[in-house]
Length: 427
Image (cartoon, rainbow, N blue to C red; front, side, top):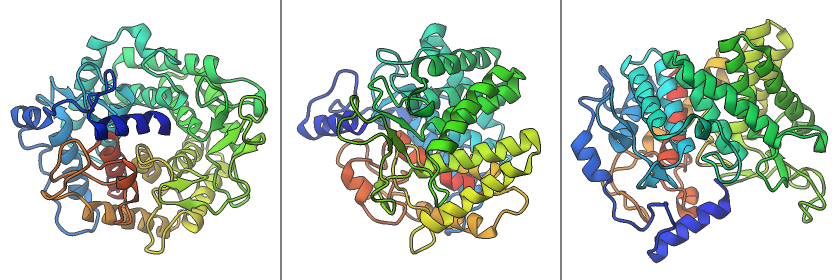
């Protein structure tokens, strides 16, 4: 979601009217839904959060919080509550927002979590299939359920996860169709290749790393080199055009004139490379983790050691440039998605031969902070449901993200933060 769209949602909430389909400004029924459909015991064998050291029971407790707040019905026939702007809404809601929660469920499932998680992922997919035509699931661009490239990439990742977790052949087919359409709509040769962020064609961005990762997973699942080639086109463009001298990645590259008259063509932020702060950054933690995961995935697929070295290089770059004074990752650019690759980062990068234990310690320290910041009964946000069991975007214990309107009670905010907690528990 763009800052412009989110600002409109926040403004509508504060002045008391609702944007069409947003759910903001309407009466909340989430607590009623939760009371009527609370999971019976959540994930079996998962203890409540106690202490601050990330471990599997804490990851399970965090996922259980997501389920308690946003899951409607039982594990096998229920679904994630439809949301818009992270808050409950009538209708179908926004599919990429619930993809953030699906990624957290998948992460815990891959860490030996209860089979209940696969069941829930399958149930969500059945729910979505019943509400969207196949053509809608595979569509992207203005006027579709995936209007911007990043929206479409998160949906693509969701479909690939569904296939991996459930074996549903329709999910695989929908991933193939959407990947092809993303490439056809937003790829061209301007700026040397790469995917446009949206139909305005002002910037190409690091969000395309999600496209590359999902494409590699699609290639692994299908054996069809078409998807490997599409993934590598975006991967190679990011490596050539967004990798910085310090081995981090710029978040965006501008088209320059005439589409973007305010900026010259090329990476945005070259005049301020050290601007990597909470809620303000020229890089993007989630995209860096996604690129590291792509490197690690390519090492697994090919056995070529330069890919392993590239993954470790990315980990070092984050350690040296994107960590605060307390040894935690900085939630720098996008409170909605920065943590979504947390589990994949742990599996694909931190488990590689030669990985530095300091990088796992950083992930654990970040998870410590997120667990410690879990909201209590006294949490009273600007709008939406109050109370305990939400996970703020302010991983450093501050309030910058909350003050900017990225609230802990939003589905994608909590799910992104939980993604880090799940990743830190990976064994």
